[in-house]
Amino acid sequence: MKTTGDNSSGICEITMDDVKSLIKKKDEIEEQIKAYYDVLEDQGVGVEGPLVDAEGYPRADVNLYQIRTARHNISCLQNDHKAIMAEIEEALHKLHAREKAKREQDEAEAQVEAMEQRVTLPPPFARVDAVTEGSPASGAGLRVGDGVIEFGSVNTDNFQNLQNIASVVQHSEGKPFRVTVIRAGQKVHMSLTPQRWSGRGLLGCNIVPVQQ
Image 1: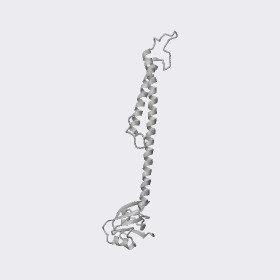
Image 2: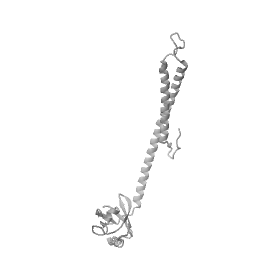
Image 3: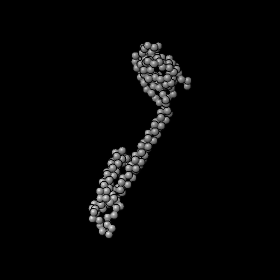
Image 4: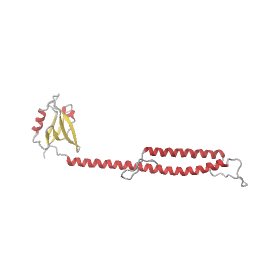
């Protein structure tokens, strides 16, 4: 059976095309077996019917050569069918095993990545506790509960008080700047542009400091 090689875990790289090819071979074998059974049925002897008459002589009313050939070929093809069914079962087992191994590897890598990210995430210096719908903050993607770790030039290392944030907003009217927040244990980056809108202020959100 043709496969695409072995991977590092020793699981044969079976593909669905390999399985389909085996199933096609199985179907062909079954068609051949049926054709030979049809031959025996036409002769009226079946697989076990006697080929000699009551006196022990070869029957003259049937084609003995055709019957023997058909019976022999059925026997061989049934062995081939049994072997191909075993191959299909093995191929499906390997295919499922490879998919399971890949799924487990992906899950493990995702867990490691999440752990590494949690370890390297800086603590937020502020938190978003209100966002007005239709505001610049809402349009940028800020959500209630976001922990702010970067707000333009302000970050966890240089943040002192909310005046730092207010200063960035005042000096950036109409100009986009980067905001990075912690959301569900992951960093989320967005671009925020302070500007006049139908509501109060330039952002339309409320940010409060986080007590360290």
